Image (cartoon, rainbow, N blue to C red; front, side, top):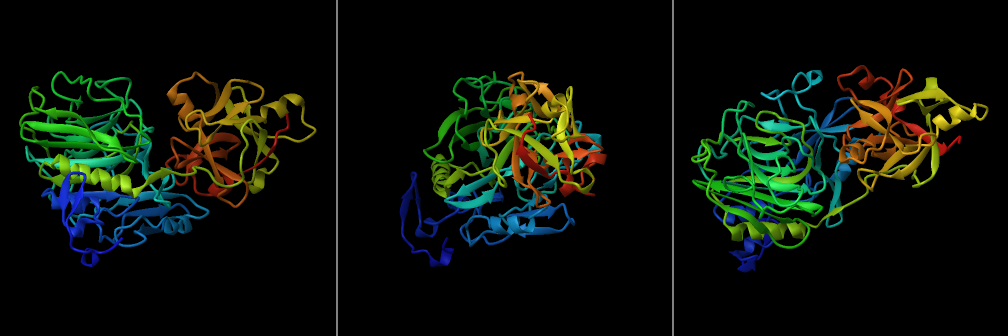
Length: 505
């Protein structure tokens, strides 16, 4: 990327928007500013959103010692320097602690505090932080990491500067993973209450993505607006056949609003142009016209901290003013040019689909113990070549393509065909596959190089901060330093590392 001062001054035509040469290599916020609707919040873990931005994109904290570091772009206006993260997090776990606001307004996103909606008491009401490695991607071949939001994970700032309040006009967009969603409330990005409680209709204006409160065409997911006490795909009634089901892997989602007018737009963030799914009057129900926006910013949660949704966020902004379609089309062209693409979710010794394996613990106490099961309970048992046939079967697993994500793996019980290792309430269990989306996701795990340098560690695809762990001879889904006994940092790296070999049976 070039700095503003080095770009040749010439007029160009980008997606219908005439801009000066200073925007030839512009970021999204440069384009919005040129259109008269500047960014007041700009968040991304993957790249700079201004052509001359060189500051921090996000902060990570590692599990080994609690140290933190910032990740910055490789160059002004460029892609995040993922190598900094990879080196800092080697042989340990890392969480994303801050997503910095690049706009200069200071609207940084941090761990969401308690709110009106229930949050797990194990976190004292605070949401979990996202794993730093759950959403790897490439931008024009350069590796970066998105923000993978699992249920009970969320970010927020209630102490905001410059965001729209009341019925003032605003716009926002986000680039999201179109395949990562659920039907719970609420995977949002945008404007919310400043006290983390539901303060009434029209006190929010945020992007929502998922298939909760079905109101669009098909089975979802859809881009909708969370306006508080309602997810809207259009005018009243909220059902809108023009709000189409999304099928793209990378999605550009847009919401914008001004007095008695708002719109939903969206498209494939990797190619093509934007579509308009709704543009018209505000809902007629009480409280939505005029709006009473409060200006806080949420990511991954609802305005009252409703935190059971899931999704993946790569970048997003909020603006003042109501952006023109030409401006948004130019932003979409910039996003497409950024070159979002998928990359491997796995590392370490490779697994082969349909192979039969056993998994040996590497903790010093337990190197003769293998992952096995007794009924539905996953445990570790001492197994050897002289063990009886039943025990050998209980400690043998067939590698399958991941039921919830084909880039990772699921593990079918050899002695109970059709049953797989899954997580439920942080325990590892063996259950029959019921074919549901939830079961598929709960039974999908992504191997990486063993955290203690031996074999593989197996992290959950749907909760990537959590790993298979043996603790007191039982199998858990543990996080490094989390709230439960089985999350203890002592011997964590050893307890989550397993040597994989040909199966006993």
